[in-house]
Length: 422
Figure 1 (tube, rainbow, N blue to C red):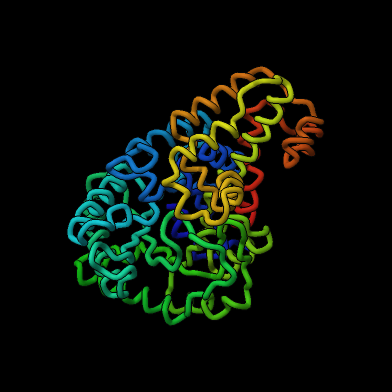
Figure 2: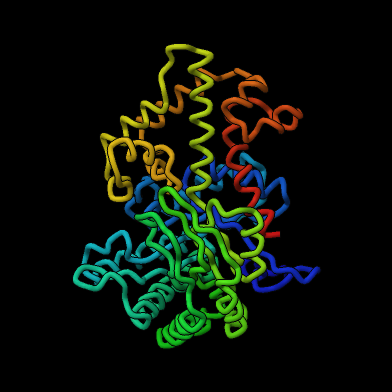
């Protein structure tokens, strides 16, 4: 029987090199389609993840429950032609975060409902994150409390697995910013100490056993740690392997485990490859993909306004929407009015991604694509406004239709992660 793709991460390929998997954390249908197309054409596996804030029993900020998210991915997979065994669904940061303003009892009760819904919908990878304090608690909880609450959710997941018929694989730990990303510019990061990683692992193993689900701990495949990679609004911290040597070596004390690295967006190709070889085998990426999506849409917007003078501006519509509804960016973007305007559209943290599903944005994007329907862009226009794709368009390897250009812009970024994973 073939090894499950998540179990395989702890093993090397025939050449003795570690393998990895790219975790695509986005609910945008064009990003998901790009990931599925890339995996299909490369003959590999796509891992599509939703966060607790994006997708939950209340709908999250996308309006989707786990079942609706699954159905949307399955529909896209059918369109692409990828086989069901070539893509996996995952749930990221599953825990109290959406309800941390409530009491711990209430937040955990809702977390249990959410985790059960994810597993019942067939999500195979479950990241349990109970590290955040709830109402009346400190912002960060002791390791023991975090592990106990994670085991409580894992027990719910195990019960749900009986109903779904899909055994979940778990990721534990959370040495990263909360869902949504860092709030400030970052100059340097503290790499997780090896003893902290081992302590988290052992605490969770003990908590699983205490909860009566010790057998499920064999399906803990990953531990979230901080290898020293992150991005803020205006800068990126690049991986420095020498700083993570001790952490990487700690994997020898945790057989069958790999590390999960969050916020690997915008890392250079060689850094991504080195992360995988150093044991950070699950590479999560999200905002960089919607950043590429936005680049393509804004490039097409400029093309459209050149070809059709007087046409509506997508940038103007998005600015209006974000100013009217500042709740998704105001706590993250500081500075003058001009600086905030720049960040709203061009920040690495890409908080504009929270707005693409809004009806106003959907109408604006729909109008743009309708204006360009049937238009084949010249190589020179692509060179000017979508330079990332120019060489492929010029060689004839790429269709110059607007929708194709958007998807291929995302794939250009995604390809670096897939290549690093082997």
